Image 1 (cartoon, helix red, strand yellow):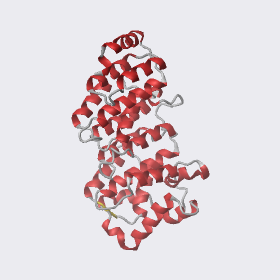
Image 2: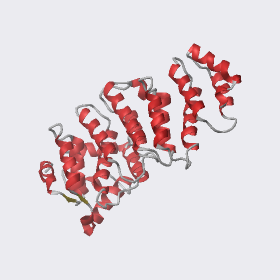
Image 3: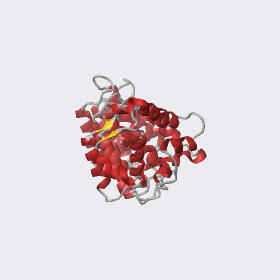
Image 4: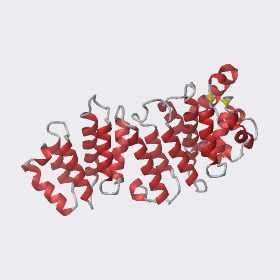
Length: 340
């Protein structure tokens, strides 16, 4: 109960009244919080109470807030590292209590929880994705910490946040991308289809949606860690490789899908390793075990048909499925024919 001891009452009252906090005050609070190496619920509530009123903050406070809340929810969990539904509900209610999510502390802490926890309820992952989605569509540059954010446009910083959530350790309860993740990514794709999104968005979208569709029927997808390596490589600026999928979707490729990949990449790369080596192996006789079934096809048709148009990213997903030799439910035939 360190934070509510009489020795800390004066400094906390001063901070709450002034609505500002200095590095020196953060050091003083840290001394009160960490003696026993634990953060209890009363102390975590006090951290939120301080954060809710701050009009002027410092980087030292941002660090302390994230450390304290993560310590409370992860270190105190039973078993350690596994955030319970009850604790997740408390955290979600707490960051929504003042009708605003603070990006530098609350959103960042939410993402850190997903990265550091062994397991966490899906509600936290969805909350993070929704926060990024809504901030992009509303142009909330403060939440995302990007002063150059353009409303309705996915830039590199926003895709980086989405990537952190999707590839977070706690989000990997299974290796598959979840339906909730896939739907949220489609929502963003639909809402920003005419925007000048960064090439990294196309790479992330195709990688994640393909994983969601194929893992459901016995396909052994790359692990989230492997997907992260592929995605990070795709988004390196050198040589324009990060724009590959978007270029393919726009019809730049004129040969077969595999030959186009080989033409655009030199040497052995994570992209070539996954999208060429795996596809060639499946073409040799392993593709039959990998299929998009009727239920998955129905979902994909509904998602692609929702806005009445075939977007470049959706086209790229279909091209990947077609080129891979996967067994596709007949419901996808009309869409596959549209890509030629």
